[in-house]
Image (cartoon, rainbow, N blue to C red):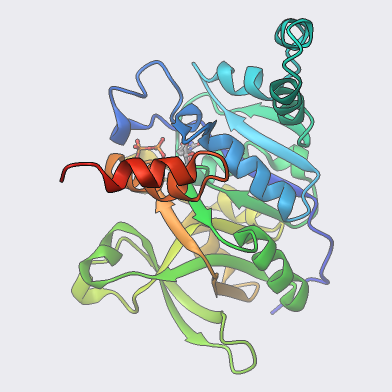
Amino acid sequence: MTQIKPMKIRKAVIPAAGMGTRFLPATKATPKEMLCLVDKPLIQYGVEEAVAAGCTEIIIVTGRGKTTMEDHFDKSSELEASLAAKNKTALLEVVRSVSKLAKITYTRQAEPLGLGHAVLMAKEIVGDEPFCVLLPDDIVDADVACLKQMVEAFNETGSTILGSEVVEGAAISAYGCLDCTVDAKNPQLLAVKNMVEKPKAEEAPSQNAIIGRYILTPRIFEMIEGIKPGAGGELQLTDAIKALLQHEKVYGFSYKGKRHDAGDKQGFLRATVELGLKHPVLGASFREWLKAFPV
Ligand code: UTP
């Protein structure tokens, strides 16, 4: 079993080339990752979390019809000039800060052939170093950014770390599921023995689900190249991580925080209310309005 010497995590890959079918018709012409949660698009939450974890290079995997993401993070000279001319300095600062968040590069996935395939598109840009993967439709509300917590765990172990949470009952059938034991020294770490993708509830080895946060060692690329397409002809990242288990240690990580599945309509609605209530400017008046709302 090879143990990789911990290296500083600098890069985060954000796969954003999927079709977003659960959110149709909103996602027919608008990328799911550009849906606005409270006051900014989902993908911005993802980029901000990666930056909070210490990443300085963000690689967004993009596809057809997704160019608004690039415009969002680009400098907008016309808009800036117009806001400056009108002395709208606070808004000008908001607009400028978005384009200065991090160095963002884009790589294309010509067809959405699965999460494993999307991550493989970043192979050359990532190179031979460990990196984060963050799925932008999983929004994690946490005092310490979820990826930052995971980077700290990676610095301890030098191993692949999968964000994980306990889900109730049959809900496990919607996730990758960990067959694991709790680490004796750090109860947030789960030593992974095996993984099962979307198990039947009665066959699930645990209630520990994998969420959309990963720290991966670079050997994952070789593993993705070695696996065969699974359901729907897609290359599954979980299959590649399963293959990685033959070579390296893999840990689940029970992060502290609350996740919202914002790629799902119900999850998005709940996230809108919860994050709206916490918003530093809008929260108080939104709370008052909700109190008076007839239910
Ligand atoms: P999802 O499965 O949640 O996204 O993938 P989806 O396929 O777009 O959504 P549904 O299920 O059809 O509603 C999680 C993330 O991985 C990206 C998606 O864009 C999303 O951000 N992804 C998924 C890719 O980049 N490429 C793929 O082939 C699949």
